[in-house]
Length: 58
Image 1 (cartoon, helix red, strand yellow):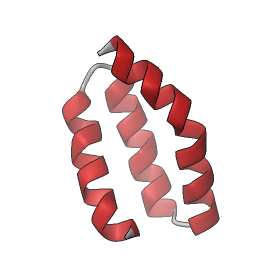
Image 2 (spheres, rainbow, N blue to C red; image 1 turned 180 degrees about the horizontal axis):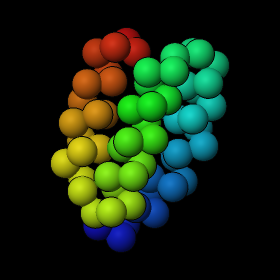
Image 3 (cartoon, rainbow, N blue to C red; image 1 turned 90 degrees about the vertical axis):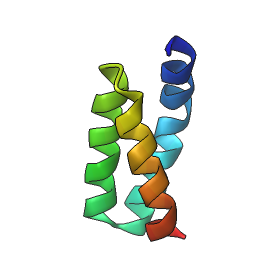
Image 4 (cartoon, helix red, strand yellow; image 1 turned 180 degrees about the vertical axis):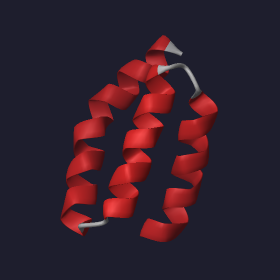
């Protein structure tokens, strides 16, 4: 879990920049929820958001 948190914090700025560029408030909210879930150790929340986001963004 610690490695996952470290990786997430490394890629988080890039994700936030991409979402800002897309201008999607909904995706930004989902990212914040995912970050909160990961930081509290709930990896399932992040996985669910990441899985859903691929369909919306792509």
